[in-house]
Image (cartoon, rainbow, N blue to C red; front, side):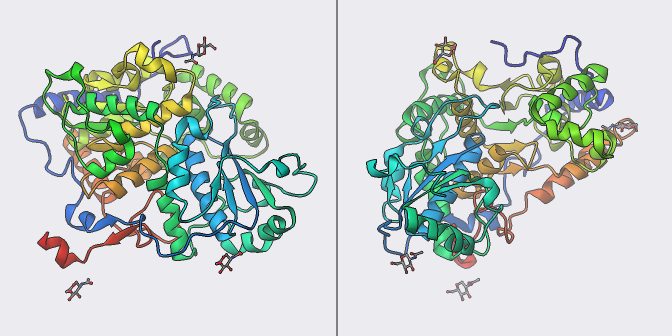
Length: 500
Ligand SMILES: *[C@@H]1O[C@H](CO)[C@@H](O)[C@H](O)[C@H]1NC(C)=O
Ligand SMILES: *[C@@H]1O[C@H](CO)[C@@H](O)[C@H](O)[C@H]1NC(C)=O
Ligand SMILES: *[C@@H]1O[C@H](CO)[C@@H](O)[C@H](O)[C@H]1NC(C)=O
Ligand SMILES: *[C@@H]1O[C@H](CO)[C@@H](O)[C@H](O)[C@H]1NC(C)=O
């Protein structure tokens, strides 16, 4: 199967041909020069002073006597992860018992995997037993209840985004007490990040960073990806322990002749759903415009309607505002400008890249050592995952989380955001993430036909350097994405950090 297969007949237009030419030239010249020294680093001093501590608890377990909470989590695997940990916190808040979350079937991701196909259910129950009670199924006597009829079914429409704990105490607790069960349907980002009691916030982090471990099947194959990328060099024991469990650090005999190496993982969030949803234009002419419009009509009817009834911003305006997902060409230009050498080993995460092979051509010609899970694994190794997009996404999660450097192309992507939080938590200040500010990049790219390479390089580096700064989680931002906060990580006194 060819990963980059495109659905359209004519090749997609390539934007930025002049800059791509300059990049090829610059990469050839850079062969003999050293890499910029901060390329594979985080600003170490401030970053190492944060260490994981969400495993510490200072409360008694709760019996979970206030009824049962059922959750049907929608979206892809990463949205579901957020839903699980929010549900854990709500269960504790309400002193109720959590039933292992159910994953709803989603027409975009088309995957029937359930919780225990992805995560180790026993570990999840056991790790959190000092916090909440978790069971695999509802007790028999509650199973036959018509939850909708008795008012125990609560949909996403009835719970505001980022609801405060007081909402759950006022509106949900009475239902639990009356009916002994509440079923949340949806339930992604339905619990606020602030204000939340300290220990409850810490529990959310404990869930995300400690209680959720991938099943053996995923860990084993994820470990193959990491070993093949890294060629035997292992790092950060806690990260590998959590990510790969018993499969951490095992040598991969097929790669023995190769020297250890660093790798960069890039999450290209440029699938057709993203391209269509953005309402942007990507240089593919009439074919592209028609194809994306047809996709919107089929999958995002509300957007098509909006287009007909309201004046919405032009594609050019959206681009200038930094509202468009980075294309593979933009991503590769950014990497070249940052100073990644032509030989860099690059792991590309993502599903079917929109525009297929022709859209990837710029990237593969500038960086020939570019691989994906499909090219790293043999067909028999990947076969057990083929029909399971969530499990494939879990493999990408592992390869990105363990990479020496990670670049995202869309900060709104749930995979990128969870991976970057994971790297902060377990990375020991040594696993940098590149998060482009799309608005600034858009302004640099708008000069594409006149800008000199040196100037392009200088401006891109400056823009990225600013996003690498280490800071404490801003108020109301996700603890999964920004675990550098006292609830999730402890700050070592700077004096002590310097001595160690
Ligand atoms: C949950 O249990 C704790 C400790 O027993 C108690 O302080 C708290 O009020 C209870 N909360 C609810 C919502 O029942
Ligand atoms: C995947 O689906 C195809 C077609 O439905 C089926 O033939 C194949 O056995 C499935 N593979 C796995 C690993 O489930
Ligand atoms: C590339 O440069 C041209 C000419 O300056 C400009 O019109 C165009 O908008 C730029 N492309 C992008 C994607 O910014
Ligand atoms: C760090 O510890 C030293 C010695 O215990 C103390 O004097 C200093 O105030 C502490 N610094 C901070 C930022 O807490």
